[in-house]
Image 1 (cartoon, helix red, strand yellow):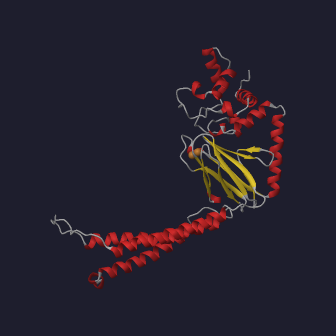
Image 2: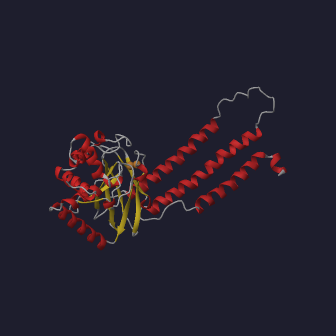
Image 3: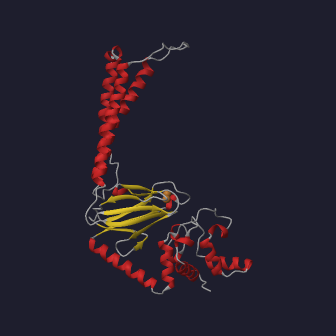
Length: 350
Ligand code: CUA
């Protein structure tokens, strides 16, 4: 210790060296990342590790210089005089420009190589259109018979090409286990590729604060075997053609779960329990009550509330939360089915 007191610079260097080694050991020992479920995960995790290891010495250096200066160049009590003016130190300036420049350049090139590798086009890609809306994700498989789903189902080892859009505000499509993340920006289509390589169910989350229901904007990504995926596709197609073929109630339920209604409204029949918007299990009763006051039928009221939600708003709920574009987004037939379904399952229907 006495040697350090005589030569504080040597002390600082030795302490920093030890702190750096300990810091790197700790940052590598901690498992920062969730399960790896895509081919990109390994490369991305390694890149993060490289960044961590590079950050530790910089962090230690900055802290060491600060602490060293505070301890050694502390003003004496009562000393209110100004410090000596210092101007320019070419050697120091060359160092602190050159080293960060090299460091940042190397990291940029390395990151670019990894990104380029991950985003390379793959053979036999499965195209999935992802649409974000307040507050749900919708998935469509345009090259598999336009199958629509509110669950993301993927085949293990089959490369996927995501085309991500938004209906309203900026969302961010994120599957942590895939290490996949891209913004959903209104008016743009962002693209990202991933090859899931592990069976299982992983969360699809929204990683951009997008309004009242942001934290509930969570769905599932299910990675299944190729055979199971084909069976699922077949079943979806069947259900879609069945609901197109006449059964209005099941068509209405599909609209409810597939167009994001279930993300905000609770409805026992659809198994949804979200409380962002009005609960719908008492819908028929409420619509009748409103109808008694205004002389409209429950059906008219529900239809109006879907097309122009802000006009039918009750006191507890804020305007501007429910999307106002369902009138454009859904066909008249889909709206008919939805209205009928909602009234049917809540005890009305007339
Ligand atoms: Cu969508 Cu946050």
